Image (cartoon, rainbow, N blue to C red; front, side, top):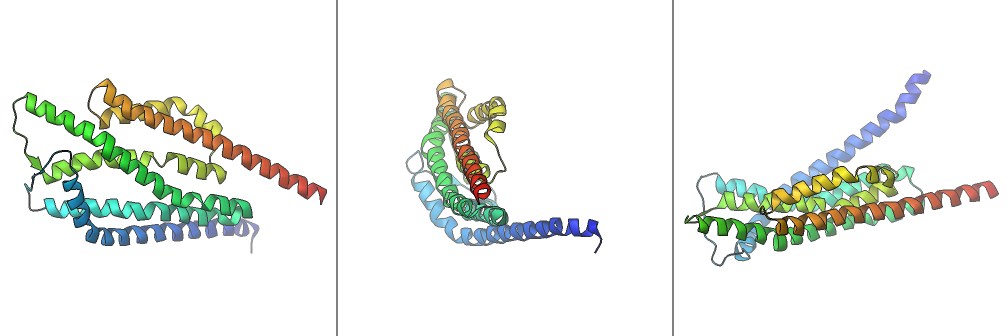
Amino acid sequence: MPESQEEWMPILEHIGELRKRILFCLIVFVLGLVGGLFGAQPLFDYLVAAAPVDNLELNAFSPWDAIGLYMKFAMLISLLVALPFAMFQLWAFVKPGLARKEQSSTLRYVPGTLIMFLIGLAFSYYVVFPMAFYFTENVTHSMGLQQMYGVTQYFSFLFNILLPISLLFELPVIILFLTRLGILQPRLLQKMRRYAWFALIVIGVIVTPPDFVSDSLVAIPLILLYEFSVMLSRIAYRKKLSAKSAEEEDDSVA
């Protein structure tokens, strides 16, 4: 076999392996959608019962409202399953290039993906969403308007707040995971700090009512989350360098 073809073989094998991992993730996401359709009704009932107002009455303004709502709930449930599975597939893809200690230490971050996503869901639903909801209610009543809730409009408003914030809560786990794998370095995160802060403040302003207190209650935790991620990345990077230097010393002694 020509030398150029021999050089390309490992690359093609990696591409094939990556394609297989991505296919697995897509299959799990689709299966999660199917399972989410069965869990959509109980989740819908809970969110209606736990709404910021008592006896929330929702109206359907289109025959497709209920179907679209089922799909949104199914996607949310599927994300809960697909995110940790995708992290596991990423770990499995890079596992052959990791030392034995790195394999076990990075595998522990996979369940952390689900935990941080659930924490983000709780923060966005019980803290951010009520602030945004009550603000819109007050504006509606101050203008003398009668509030009528459309089921699509209500849950679109809810999901537009929940999903971005919940995904942002994945930052510490993902950054720490990528740092331990050697894909990300804390120096890059420090250089991106100014842009990251700006993006997080913009997100905080978008998903909250236009007042300084509400914006701060969301933007500040997100910024602290980013800084916490940078700190974790710095610690993990130092440990990785220490472990690498220790291995080199052992090899030189041997």
